[in-house]
Length: 488
Image (tube, rainbow, N blue to C red; front, top):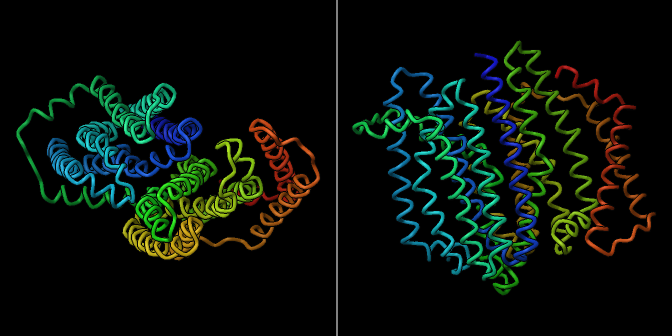
C-alpha cells in the first residue's frame, strides 16, 4: 500500500510539473501570434479560469477525500459534496451570464463581457469532476488516475488553444473567447476519461438526495482555506486584473495604451512561475520526511530553505541581468524592461513564500496562513490603487513585492521555532551569487555578440545561462555549500 501511495504521489507531482510547463509554453506563442492586445485579453480572465479549475484539480477533491478516509459513510459525504458544489456553481453561472457586462466594467473593459460565456459553461461541469476525483483521491489504488486526468485536461486545453491561435483569424476578443473554451474542453475530456475508468461512481448520482450540514460546512471551509493557501500568485493576478486597467485609465492613459501596458506587465507571471518550477517537486519529495524527531525535523526544514535559496537567488539574478534577452527571445520586443527586471525580485520572494507556506500547511496551521494571505491580498489591492495611479504598472510590481515580503515575514514568524538558519551558510550562498553576478556582468559588457534577431538573443541567453550555471556550480563546490543540506 505504501508503495502505491508513493507512486501515486510521485505521479501527481510529475503531473503538476508538466501542467506548469505547458501553461507557460502556450502563452508564448499566444502572445507572438495574437499580439500584445490579444495577450492582454487572455490574461485579464486567465486567473479567474485557472483558480476555478484549481478548485477541481486539488482543493475540493483533496478535502473531500480526507473526509471520506476519516468516515464510514462515503455515500453521504459524496452526495453532500455534490450538493455544496453543484448548487453554488449553477447560481454563479446564471449570475455571471446576467451580470457579465457589469463584471466586464469592473475589469475596466466592456468588450471582455463575451469571455464570460465559456466561464459560465465551465462552472456547470466542475462539480461532477470534483466528486469523481475526490473518490479516486481517497484510494491508493486509484489516485494515479487523478494525475492522468490532469494531464489529459491540460493537453487537450493547450492543443485547442494552439489550434485556435494558428487557425483562427478574427478580432482579439473573439479569439480570447474561443480560446477559453479550451478550458471547458479540457474539463470535459478529463471527465469522460474518469467516467470510463470509474463507472461505479455514476451510481452516486442516481440515489435520493442526502445532505449533512456539518460535513458541508467542514468541506467548504477547509477547501476554501486550502485553495487560498495554494493560489497566492493567482490571487495577486486577480487583483491586478481588477485594478491595473482602471487605475491606468484614471491616471490619464487611453484604454488602448493601458491594454498594451497590462499585456507587457503580464509577461512577468509566467517567467516567475517557470523560474521557481523546482520548488513544488522539492517540497513534495522532502516534506513527508519531516515528521520525525524534532531536531531532525528542524534540519530537514532548514535544509529545504537552503536548497531553495541556492536555486532561487541565482534565478532571480539571472533574470534581472538578462531580462532584455528573455523579453526579446520569448516575446519579440523589449517593452517595459525595467518593470520586468524589478519583477525578477519576486522569483526569490515567491519561492520562499511558497516554501514556507507549504511547510505551514504540512504542520496543519492553515488558519494562520489563510488569515495572513487575506490580509496581504487586501494590502496588495490598496497599494495597487495608490501606486499604479502614481507610478504606472511598476506600482503593481512594487505592491506584489511588498505583499510577498510581508507574507514571507509572517510565515517566518509562524515557523520561528523551526527556521534557524546559519549565518555562515547564508554568507557563502551570497558570495557564490555575487561572484556569478560579477562574472556575468563582465561577460555581458565585454562581448560583441551580434544581437540583431530574436534567434541571436536566444542563443546569447543560452550561452550566458550555461556560463552562469557552470560558474555558480564551481564556486558553490569550492565553498562547500552542498555539505550544509546533507540532512536531505
